Structure formats: structure tokens, C-alpha cells
Amino acid sequence: QVQLVESGGGSVQAGGSLRLSCTASGITVSSYCMGWFRQVPGKEREGVTSTSTGGGRTYNADSAKGRFTISQDSAKNTLYLQMNSLKPDDTAMYYCAATKCSSGAVLRSAGSYTYWGQGTQVTVSS
Image 1 (cartoon, rainbow, N blue to C red):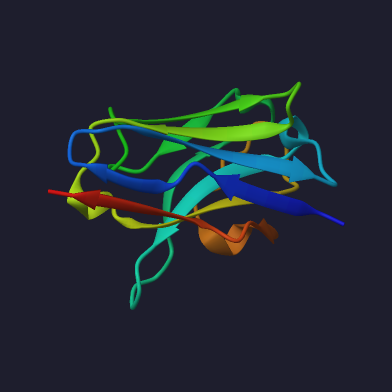
Image 2 (cartoon, rainbow, N blue to C red):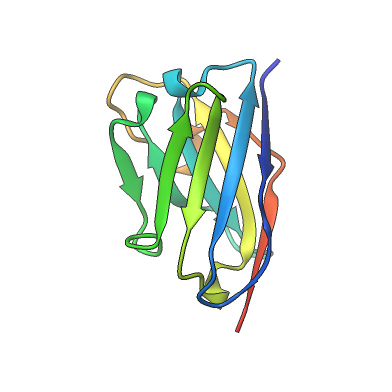
């Protein structure tokens, strides 16, 4: 049974930083395409950043470029999202996602992913 468990969310002031973690069981993070998505009530889930198997290639949404970094720790079977220079517009529920994919593929859309975590809330105040 696959489980993805996010943690690290919270409340922070604008300009601050947070690091989200996604610990996986039932899959090996480095063998799957992984991604971070976010959603606010009434809006569609949007991609923030994603990575190919092993983390060799990454995609960052325009909103994340220069501020967010996706990484993984194989020993801990954990995916991370380092978020710096946070803005109030970054306020959302953040989700980790995983799916089997071809080597080198980077999947951007939520519909491409099979497994999802329960989400962790990030709130940025001005």
C-alpha cells in the first residue's frame, strides 16, 4: 500500500521560508516521478514543481522559479520542497504526488499522478 505523508506546513510572514517534506512508504521515491502541487478553495490544483526519476530533471512553474526547490533524500525515501521568499499568494494546501513514469520524464499536470498525500497547509501573511 502506497502512502505519502506531507509535513512542514505552517504559518509564516511574507519573505519567510518553509521546508515541506513528503515521506513515502510502499514506493521508492527515486524510482518514481514526483511532484508538488497546491490548491486553494474554489480553484484547480496547480503544479508547483516536479522531478524525473532520481531527480535528474526538474520543472518549476513560473510562480516557483527562483524561490522554490524540489529535492529528494533516497536514504530517507523523502521528497522535499524548500520554499523561500514566500508571498501571501503562496497560501494554499500543498500536496505531494507520485507516479510511475519513463526515465527522464517530468510530469507537470495533476492528472498524470497516481498517488497523493493528504496535504499540508501553508499560510503566508503580509
